[in-house]
Length: 507
Image 1: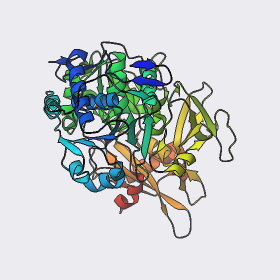
Image 2 (image 1 turned 135 degrees about the vertical axis):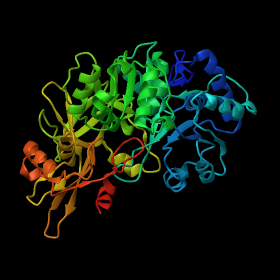
Image 3 (image 1 turned 30 degrees about the horizontal axis):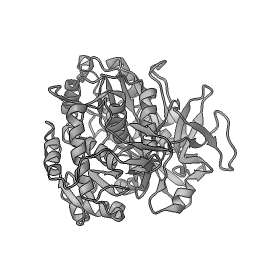
Image 4 (image 1 turned 45 degrees about the horizontal axis):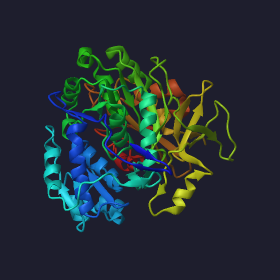
């Protein structure tokens, strides 16, 4: 990355980039990847995909996606990764106005939504065949290979969509500088070292998927080992893939973390020899799951927090000083954090308030929504929409989302997350989701949906046992009125719970 005076830089593929084969049979370095990045950049120029034009990618994490990202950066295009699980109608509704010049996707749906764009169908390859397909597509480039464009650091580098867990996803614009700064903060906060191997399970349309694999790993000299989505359908097959990857750093989501913890002795500890740390984001971690994993494998589980609007990471636990049972989101990472009450007053420790973040890497705004962009800021502080508490040691605990509380019949305001966390401590529960059902006389009843843990008989009457368990830990006012056993909870592909669909599922 060559910095130019005046806030302009040329985005070149980092010298430390390394992509490893999952089986450890092959590693691609800068010498192998840089010529392909240049060739793809030339093809993008020939198609007019530069100077702020959109390059859209819909697919899993794979080597070709990293190449496409850095080729887009080199020509000044905006890289837009979208959820691979979006069908055509959702893609059209959320991203139809982007008018991308180039679309690279794992399905035909994206090409039908954007018929005027140059398109490439790119299947996920476990043997780097995706790189060959990308090279064949770029081979006939009408553009010429030349030095990366000099682009202002404040110019858009990527556009990512929010999870949509509480409604329609929003398109978040992140500057080139914000992406680079977030990656460098990640390397420092996580303590990644050159030569280590990283398995990063979040897909490219998430901030953790894009930043960790495509930016932080290359900038830090860490070897990224992509595992395409088709390797993740079977939990035991995934565990075997992870063991074969022999990684030192593993990034996963809370749901997979709990599944691994529940498997216990069924996963030999020796399968993960050499693993230094597991990193997890997306929700408050279950302390019991963290302790089970640490006791079984001896591996610390680092919780971190960030939003798409903050370019990801802004709070994190640290590996140095980590201890089993340590809770919370950790401390600020290269940013400032504060809590604000409903009346706008800045709050002190141990008081619940909205978490707000100030840093140099906040979003540039939402696409085509100036009002929503303005509403997200309090001066130069970004409103996260999350409720948190600050501990005496300066760390933060997540409480829940603003507005996502249950008004009980006793006129209490209860955050569903606190009940979910207790339910998921029980060995019979793999996942839990809680919502409030309005009553005709006013107030809401607490309804809980639970997915049984592996080897737990779903026909077993869990209702009274789990209701009593909740009351024992939280008090009778938080005892669910109804507990329903379900096979699966509605989630985004990144694992976030779709709360607006819970009442429908309960029917």
